[in-house]
Image 1: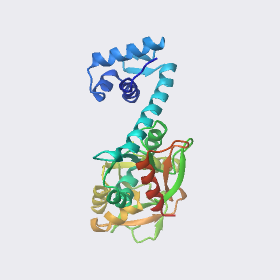
Image 2 (image 1 turned 90 degrees about the horizontal axis):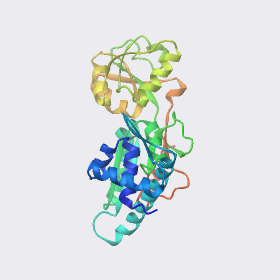
Image 3 (image 1 turned 180 degrees about the horizontal axis):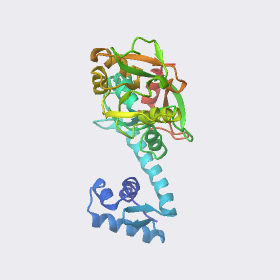
Image 4 (image 1 turned 90 degrees about the vertical axis):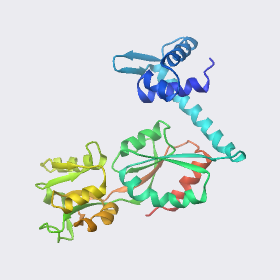
Length: 297
């Protein structure tokens, strides 16, 4: 079998996107060329790699195996480029990091600033996604390093505590409970709520614990930015639960107050995650060591 790197990258794009059309676009080739390459790979293998359906394609058992090996080969090529790039001009390489909303918005900008200054020829690809998607990206080789909440399943991942990320309640300063030093979620169940968009790991966490208490939350507004949430809370539109780091920055200047949550699940921890047994590219390893040095225990 003779699969070239273009074949392997195309096949990985197919698995990630679920359609030949999208994969062809990502691979900068026509749909006809992409289809021909897939047929060529299947002909060499002597077995189908994809099952075609109305909603796209999915890998056969052979396709799943090829996908695993293709990711490993492409990652090794990335390692090679990173290790050799210092001998040429331009960037030495790229480190790929995924983080949840709290990590990307509140913790990583400061944490990586010193690294980028010390390594001017290393580019950082930073992607924000749910903690589950952070770990899925690591397992699939889509990123080098992940920052995720300890509320998700880390099986198959090497994870170490990185920074505390407790959650707090955010209330209007005139709210009757705003003078309290701490609260429990149960005391806020009947309030109107403002939060992150549906699908956010943080919103799912709060909603799950509210449901366990017998009272699903009543969402009035769902916004993308912590600052916008605090603005609406300050204007009396509802209450929110946010990471303490975000609340400290945004609540006070928007007429809101952050109050500690007593619930054990609110004492979250951010985890620094990598894939076990995988050697990182040199520049990604440097970033990992930098982040480890900037952990807060």
